[in-house]
Image (cartoon, rainbow, N blue to C red; front, top):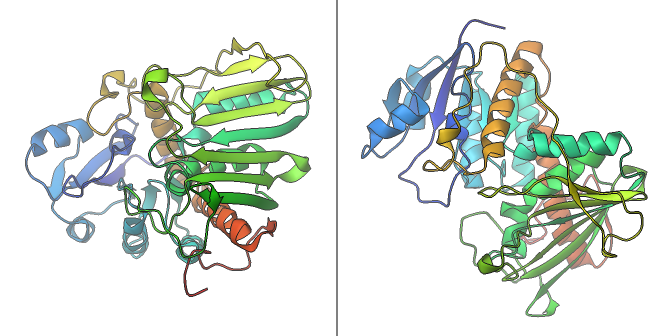
Length: 387
């Protein structure tokens, strides 16, 4: 491993957005890492942000940072996917690797270009899909591989089902669930989907007014069924307004049902954190399955790394859930190792493109009224009025 990695962070507080996931502290405390610079158009409270990230220098613009710093990696924290492609292009022009917030982009055509430019230039792009790195989800993966629930039959995934339920939930939060499904079972083979608005089928011309600029989205109730290798079925379901904050019920997450039991894990980004649970009762999950908590696998320590500072959890734009902090560090270290070893990170531009393709496939299936096969032949968005 090289002696010094220079990291630049793009976290612009001047751009209003919902809460972030703590990527700005992902590289903090890793061996041989220098947080060289931070981009932020706001200067109010800057000292606190510099202290939090440990960035040595501040820039008002991304371009200025790239022009003046000799960086190895940039961290793109914006949760607005329209921001990413221009930023990735600028980084690629300088041979700088990327750790990018999800979704990687709005456009599947842009995702194709990102994959191409990364392959042509040997660029490593790690997409921030933390479930691939969280001990909770990796333990779930290990239990599946060990046959703990027999032959997997179906993975049932849900978004948050809050005020963004339906099409917006599919893009903003469904990207996590869809990526997790392909992580566990491989790229999907096909999808069949149904989307409604006020109880009637979604029409191509309809759009949801989204909370954030996430690109085309539509529908307030959405159900999609994917087929994965080996005949495993993957469900994604989201309904607007289903989530009740007072109930204590967290919808977002997955349940994997097999021939000899089932595994369940919610995707908690706050506290209390939900635990990985297993039921060893065969038969349908809804028939009174009795779940028990599962101990998580232990990770090998990163040689020379500082202990994780769990007091960061709950700080501004850092999730309260400790597993996010751990997964971010694991992703950052995996990216550095991938650069050193000339391999793809576990979460990369290819896997991020698959998640986006699955989203396109959901709309394509509903609007065509049939099952849609992957990879998609048509790369334009199915909601594009010109198509």
